[in-house]
Image (tube, rainbow, N blue to C red):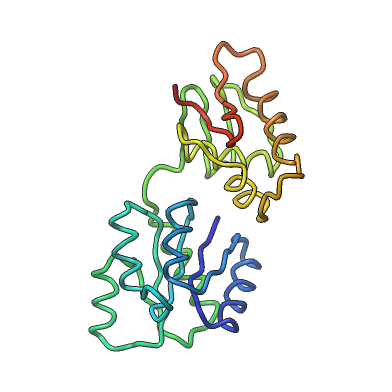
Length: 221
């Protein structure tokens, strides 16, 4: 589960990163509202933990803008503001839940699990005859199960979630390997090659397309 944490207090941010990492999430921490909006638009997160009082754009404004952008990820507001009107404003702005600081890790994780159980739709992604079931962690093409490594699965899932969209090398590397592409590392090409062998070999239609000088996309015309 890819997690965006928007928190400008470094101590609290590191605490949440450690707690959620140990719980199996893949957290990304930012301390600025404008940067949070950029990342939420560029990458697909499964959940967003959002402090209300962050610089440049506050949490309520971020919520509204994300919902206007059709970002459907569950949003959990984290704040020291515990007045009823603040909670109402947060929920009305598009947040799914509201947790007042200070909080215990157990409660934070319990609320996150509850939001994920609500879900926002099917756990299955389908692109042509390629199907990924996130609950079973299983991929099939034309009904035949494909055996993928954890990295191959993560890369394919990101491509499928953004089917038809060109994803840059930097976007893919940041999402799957968590670092910036500097132009000298061919790890992405290696794993794309692995995926092609498992998904496209001996198929009438290849699904993984190379966009020269840019990156890759899955499906589309």
